[in-house]
Image (cartoon, rainbow, N blue to C red):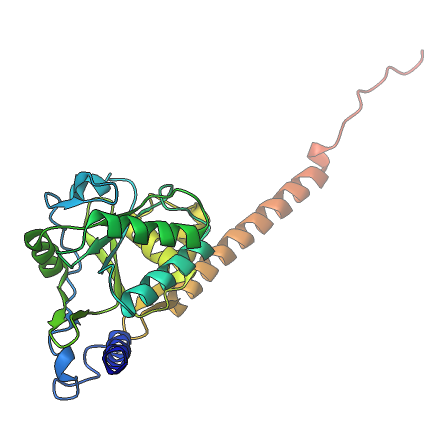
Length: 282
C-alpha cells in the first residue's frame, strides 16, 4: 500500500512538472527523484533513421521505416508496465485520436517506443490491442515497439527525453510528452502534459507536414494561429487574422466593383438591341 502511494505521489509530481515551463521550477524545488527527469527540446533535428527496434508482431524494424516522406508521425516514449503516468498519457492520446476526424494511417502515423529494455513483444502487442480497442477504429497504423538499451539510449538522447529509474519502487520517473515528426523525421513539435486536444494535434500535424496533408481551408485556418510554448497550445494570431480580413475585404470590394461594372455595361445604350431600319413604303 505504501509502495503504491509512493508511486502515485511520484507520478502526480511528474505530471505537474510536465505541465509547467522549465523556468517555473528551480533545481531546488524539484523533488530529488525527479532531478534527472526533463525534456531538452531538439527542434529541427532529424531522428536517427537507422535505429532498429522490434514491433508488436515480433518483426525487426528501423525507425526510418515509419518515415515515408508524405505523412507526419506522432511519437511517444513510454514503458508498457508503467502503473500510472504512461497509461494516463496514452489514454489521453487515444481520446484525442478518437475526436480527430483523421485516422492513423491515412494522414499520419503513430509510433510508441518503450524505454524499458526488458519489455518484450507480448507486452507491446497487449498494450496496442488495448488502445486500439479503446480507439474503436479497427486496425490503424499505430506501432508499439521495444528495443535494446543501445537503441533506447540513442533515441532518448537525440530527442532530449531524460528519465530516471527509481530503485525503491522498481519504476521509472519520466516526462509526459508527445513528439511530432515531419515526414522525413525532423522533430517539429513537443506537446506536453496529459491533455492534447484535437485542434492542437491537428495543427501540429499540419505544421509538420508543411501542407502535405489537410485541405486548403485547414491551411488557411492554421495561418490564423500560432503555437504558444508557455500554454502548450495554438492560440489565435491577431495580426494574421487582421491580415486575412484585409485580404478578404479587398477581394469582396473587387468582386463588387466587377459586378457593378457588368451591370452598368449591360444597361448602356450601346449594349441594347438595335432594330434594323425598315424601308419606308413607296
